[in-house]
Image (cartoon, rainbow, N blue to C red; front, top):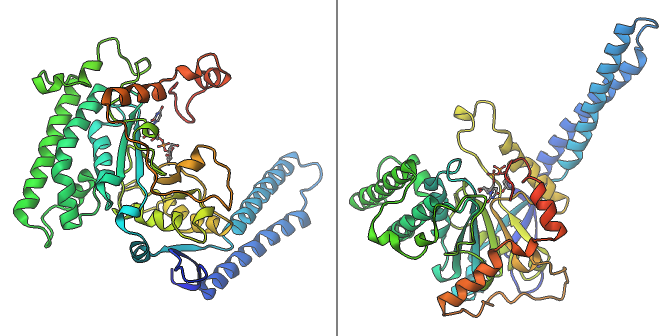
Length: 412
Ligand SMILES: O=c1ccn([C@@H]2O[C@H](COP(=O)(O)OP(=O)(O)O[C@H]3O[C@H](CO)[C@@H](O)[C@H](O)[C@H]3O)[C@@H](O)[C@H]2O)c(=O)[nH]1
């Protein structure tokens, strides 16, 4: 929506994002529409109180009460919706200004967490496509750390990840060379059936073939439930699985997680394993909020909306999540900020770790954890962070053990 007013920073520093309001005519039209519906609601209430049910007729009385309850509820719902949608705002980022104000090596490093929990409901090919989509972000590779948390502790997911790390050596340069979007190979090859004009056809088909080979290999291993008995699979990591390991009871198996002792990046992003990133510049957009000199300090997290594909064929009923994304979120933002949704959210690590807001605190964006060179030592430290023993005999441990993950039957 075109903005009619832009608020920005003061002084010489150019703001990295602008907050825009929809044009006045659009707002006035919406408010007129909302006002007429509300007038209709009031008239219905008026009708109801001036048409009381006849005395004695109990069926009519119950029908009247039922209608009144429904109309009151609808009126209450309408007032709530109306007030939330009264004053939307839209945010626009200026990535060009970000590029002018910081060199690439001054940008903060970013830790990205993909979490998975069940290799049956969340097939490893889906998980690794998500992982590849975030590995291929348009960002300095040495500033990007991608972690996969697998609550199921599945060797199949681990196998798929090892295979994906080989594909990444081809997929990431390919994406950067041809500015591929989206950067999930599954989503990309499902959408694009033939090489686009910018791509060299031979290279495109080779890439597609590599991906297809990987998908076939991973799917056949997942279907068989066993990883192949080849010498390369005796590598460290695979040797940590044995027949006693189950998804509910397994030791911490660390190959690539626990970021505070590995990368400790000031920015953290979380992604569900069944969502992929559809914009390779998302990190830079999020940084425009965090790094804005005037208002960045007030921002604890940047939440991206979630979109779903083919929920209903051709979306004939209008996917309600689009209404939330395009209308309700800008409206909530107009009241002071978007709510935290879950997947696709960038956080300040310090805010997650409990630092209280202070206008005087200045984040050191270039800080990095002192990298431990000894892999064994690093693994030991990481294991001590990932284990659940810290919660034994604590109220937290007891409460979490007996309560389910909201909406799920997992017991963590
Ligand atoms: O014990 C668990 C259970 C789930 N997950 C992972 O958590 C993610 C979310 O779980 P899912 O069942 O897909 O949640 P949904 O209900 O589909 O998604 C809603 O809940 C998520 C978690 O709060 C949010 O990130 C999403 O935005 C929101 O749409 C998935 O990657 C799971 O693999 C774990 O890692 N461990």
